[in-house]
Length: 248
Image (cartoon, rainbow, N blue to C red; front, side, top):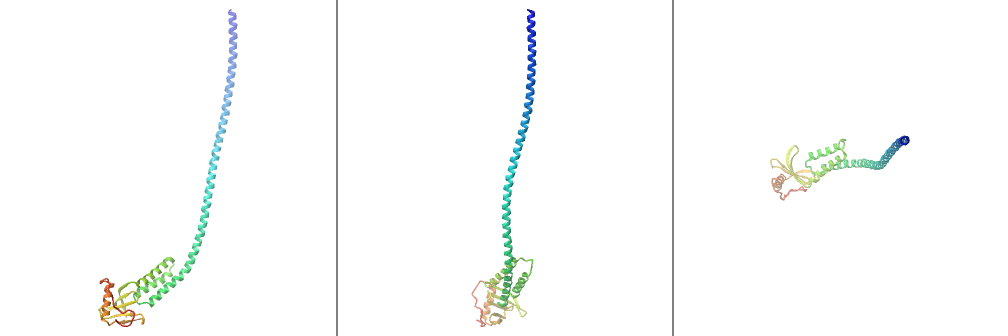
């Protein structure tokens, strides 16, 4: 019986040892397999990462390409617009140059006509008006004054002359070195009164001379007219000689 038991035990021990060896071998195979699988997985993961990275770069590059195309198209439109604007500016420069060529002779003509007007007009404020004409003539030759400003100054001078026709004014000036008070009614009637209120006269536009006034009524009206111009008296009707050589 003991022999049999020993035999069975030995047999079981041998069998167990053999089985254990087989398990160990199997575990080694499994471990090697897992190691290889892990290596393969790492390679797969690495390849997948590279693929994702390449895909990301592709998407970024594609987006950049689209943005570049949009920018280039916008830039093309801007350049085209600038070219058209440049053409317009060139044309404007040509137009301005042509306008200046045409307007300069016009300004010379305007100043000349203004000069003739002062020479032929009733001789009121002669020094002031003559000085203004000389200044206009001087401005025409100045390079530091723009054409538009020259033209504006000339128009302003014309407006001053125009306004004389619709105003009444008194001022002091001289005739043959003697000072008088003058009364201007528009630009058609001009009278003088001596400072001692003894001598009176008016400008005769037909004869282009000063004529004395002897009428006491006319003298009284001149005095009233001067007070009205000085705003020392309310506006009133004046009975004065205008364009005739006969006193009223």
